[in-house]
Picture 1 (cartoon, rainbow, N blue to C red):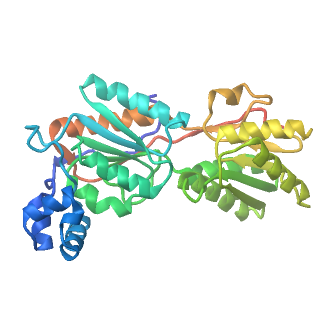
Picture 2 (picture 1 turned 30 degrees about the horizontal axis):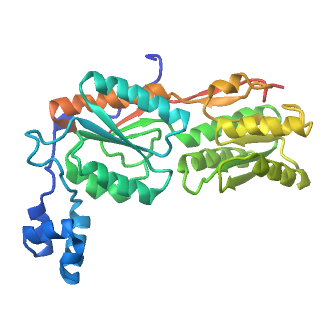
Picture 3 (picture 1 turned 90 degrees about the horizontal axis):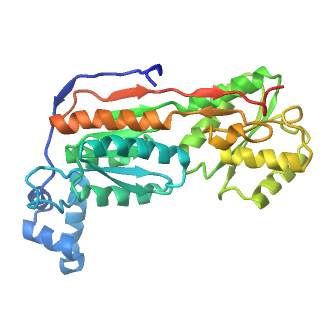
Length: 351
C-alpha cells in the first residue's frame, strides 16, 4: 500500500536514553534498604504500613517495574514485544495483530498480547504485568496514556501508539484522526440533502475513538445548522436494544434522515431493523458505518462505511519498532505517521 499518504514528523534516530529504574533507586527514594523493597514486592504485609506506603509512592514516582528476567538474560530485554488492544474479537485489531506478528516472527520476536476491554484501569494492570517481563518494545492502542508517561519513560524501550493520532506521542504514533472520520461521514450525508441525524455508539465513555468520530460528525453538521442526536449504548448491540432505539426514534417529531453507527456490525443490524419496519433505505433513512467489514458490501442494501488500514498500521508499527530494537536506539523526536482512511459510498446512502 505504498500509495497511502505518510506524514513523518522526524526520522532521525538517537541513542537510547535512560536505563531501567533499579530497586536500589526505589529504596533510596523511599529511605529504606533494597532488601526491604524486595521483601515488600514479595509480601507487602511483611513490611510496616509506613514503610510500605513510602515504597508504594517511590514505585509510582519512579515508574519502577519488576524485571523478572534480570540475571537470567545477558541482554537488557527479552525477545518479546508487548501489545495491549481494547478487544480481541474486533476484526480491525485482529488484522493489525496478524500483520505485526508476521513481521516480528521473521526476526525472532514474539508478541505478548492482552485485551484491556476498553478499561483504563485494566490497561494499567496489564502494562505493569507486561513490563515486568522486560519486553523489547511496547505497543498500545490509542493515545490516551498520559497517566502512564513516567512509567513508560523509565523503561528505556521504544513505545508505539496505534490506531489513533493526537497530542504528545511517546516515540511513535501510527493511525489516523477519528474526528476527521466523523467529519467525512457528515459531509457525505449533508451532500445528500439530509439535515437531521443520529449517531449510535457503544460504551463511548470508554471507547474514546468512537466518541471522537461522533464529535467530529456533530461538530461538522452543527456548523451547517443541522440537528444531531448522539446515542451511547451501555452494552453490545442486541435485537432488543436496537428495537428500543428505533421505537424511540419513531416517537421523535423530527425523525432522523441519516443514521451513522460507530461500527459496521451496529450499522448492519440497523439495516435489518429498518427492513423489518419497512423503512426504506436510503430514501427514508440513510445508514453508514465504520470499518468496512467483509459483510458490509454483501448486505442488502450494501453499506456505506469508512475503510481504515489495519494491516498497514500493523506493518508500519512493526517495521519502525524493529529498527530501534535492533540498533538499540530511540527516535530523537516522536514520529507520527498518518495513514488516513477512505470513505466507501455504497447503496445505503446512494440516492
